[in-house]
Length: 135
Image (cartoon, rainbow, N blue to C red):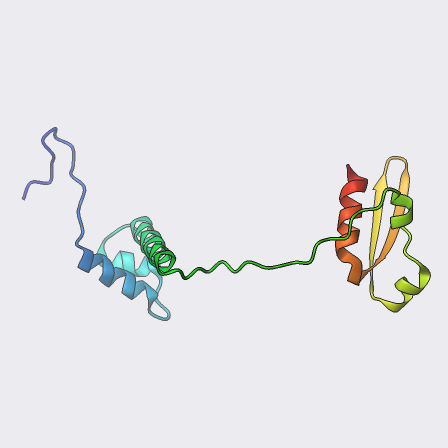
């Protein structure tokens, strides 16, 4: 059997689909290590990882073709708009803060420190305010 190509370089080995399937099944056994399976068969672990990645992509493509997807869209309520005055947003009334477990943010900047407490049920508004304030 000639292991050299026509230009004198070594030829790449080719493995049958049955062999690849067997190796991947062995890798999926409980307690099996990819490196151990590769070593047992005399092949590089990187090659087995490439086969596993290809197999995973093939399965994902089949799922997409069937209409099955691992992605599940999450519907979130719209965030309340940030008011024109950031000073009003930074100070929820004392009753709101006392009733809820709050968000407390301490921001240090060159001009001084700012501490903001915000009710946790209005976290979306807090995030919007913080994005605006940090611009």
